[in-house]
Image (cartoon, rainbow over all chains, first blue to last red; front, side, top):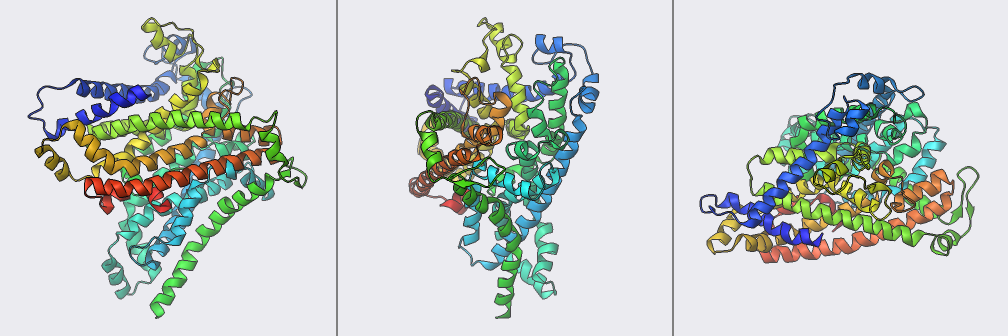
Length: 304
Length: 316
């Protein structure tokens, strides 16, 4: 690793140089090419596995074994219907999909409603330049690893008879995502011009009226970022899910996939169509919303 | 008068639900886990208070706490260093405005979007002997095709760390890009006019300015990897043997497979305390380095600091 370190950083600097003085930099150094090589390798390394999942999802087992990247072999669309309806004795994939959607929607609702209301209350109640105590509390809440929380949360869900409920686990995820939403929206609301709020008040809007009609609509970007980040977190979360969602038909995609390995070993292609089905929805959302993610993370997002 | 009063009420009412939620699902569980670590509990009957017995058991003969902790630290360090080095490099390239920066940014963040269980299952297949991608590629360059990466107790932890780097580098890259873009172009131009070399500019301007962000991202990565249950469970379930059994996996096994909730809680407490210590130390470092970074680069505006993550900012 240290070898990478010593070659990597000069290379980065070399890459940086190309933009600042393109005209003078005719002779590109070894570092430039090494850096460029790494970028190319990393790009290939990130695109191809994702692409392969989709290519392999329409291949037969022999083709999967012979061409692990998925570029050659016969098309076998039947994999998808097999995964969708489940192998004999296995769980149909649409159960997982529905459960994932349910938990994601519940989590997004809870996280956005609680998070934005809280950060607006914080912004309107603290004097400029001060970090509210409550914000610190939320940050501290982010630091506790899930491993410290899982056993009692399992106990709580058990007592409330909410085990095996994707909606309930979605609510839990929503609350856990709340600090992130507060951090992002707090930074955003802080920059909201006070004159606009005063103008709203003069026009007869209450504090909450200003919040609903001015602050929320004019902060669509950061809110969209919170929604996407929550969605990515909940769609992939399995540590809490695996303990709370024990019945086969209550599992989300992320949890269901953990048990998929042995289930379809006679048909590798079906395994990959399962992976593709789990990836496609979140991938589409990401590609549509990706610019918000960058801005949101810059405002202070940290996924659990 | 009335206005301030109203605002106070707004604060209380507005923040109450979220505070209640955090109290119920974060604060209470933390306290409860500490309590459970002092009990013997099978999950069904009432927990029985047994003092520090659990801690003595897991640290004593036959207990493998320290082995697990060391393994977790090794996984965490290898993964975090990988993520930081590659992430910094990619961010530097993007902030230099390489052609197609938008495309690269979108692509490099992709692995973060793919659900971790999907990545786990995909890479397990990719590391299979004979049929997997890794050996297919190694075979193409004549290095043999039969290595069973994940069945090798010496390699498995590094293979999972590698997959973690694959997943998380995009996240680090995006945040560091934000910090690097916060450095005004004028500084680079001034440095260039003074005849600073490319290397010099990177080490004397970019790195000092983004150092607090680097530390923050490193801290986040350490927290994430300490939570790396899903990836390990999807890939190896802690095996072969115990070679990838990091702390959260061990806690899950103890509690939900062996039904030994007290001992599992004790392990979780040790992990939590360890992480807290790391957070405190690194937060100190972030605070001090953000000061020196400001001094060295001559400026460190709020904007640049903002992208150092409110998370890092809030702790400091």
